[in-house]
Length: 361
Image 1 (cartoon, rainbow, N blue to C red):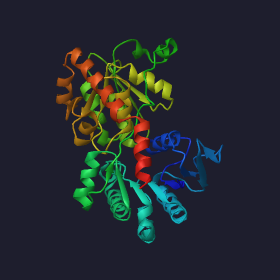
Image 2 (cartoon, one colour):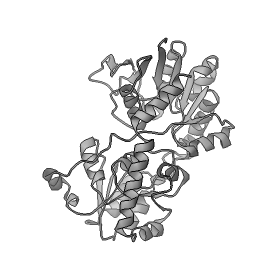
Image 3 (cartoon, rainbow, N blue to C red):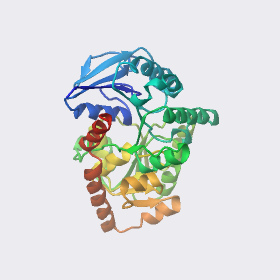
Image 4 (cartoon, rainbow, N blue to C red):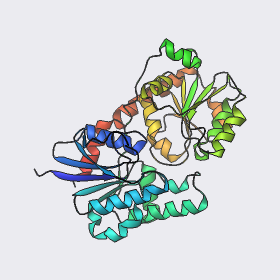
């Protein structure tokens, strides 16, 4: 069998340092079949110190452009331009490079686009940027030969918005998250570990319904630990200032990137809260499911699909406060259901097999 040559465009690079796309590529490398030769484009601006030529069997090519923010459009367009002729398939992660795809329509059958979330709906963008991001998604979808949606809700949206019913649903894995026992030194650092606490881990932006969770827990008998980027914006800083007085009820922690610490915090909670209202299959939700903890989600089609309608669901502060009155036995049942679903649908081996089968078409 001839080797299939694949380029990956749209992630910051390997080894993974950042978000969901990078983690996906990390595990595609972990489970690469022998008959695939994969090249990942990486940003020199991110990988300043060490730039290996290979990683877990993937070839790494470095581009001297930044790969985040608005600059990601140029980074993705350039890598699409230089890779279109060279590879059997191009796996495009996100829509940032969409501007150039109409000029590469001759190679449309090579382009495999992972849509990501419905980014233009996110409140972090102003009205002008929402229009730009929406246009990029439209151009990317129309000029890619194959489409991947990470959630049935995204697949439905693509059909309703663009008339394409040929996208395949491939979710994300989360089995890098696992139970981590509490250590005495971590109790010294995070005293709430010695008792019951709820936890949420998310970016501090309004479409993640941050204030809804803080309002529900500001007087609750168990504290809420919220891990996020509290200095990212004026909105985030104002929220932190507003709720910083509720000591003992709210612990507002800066983002934590050490996986072992993160696993310890989320796998020992009595309740995990996921309040994202936009997007598709969110990696942090899938990871929490693998931690065997009970989960309450914001009630929308994306979260309901991932949890198969077997979690607790809320749409406002009052809904959440009512859920908090549920008996503990029902929380144990939810935790077991979440772990079973995660093991069946959201392991990286399963997800990688689906990707490579699709890329082999």
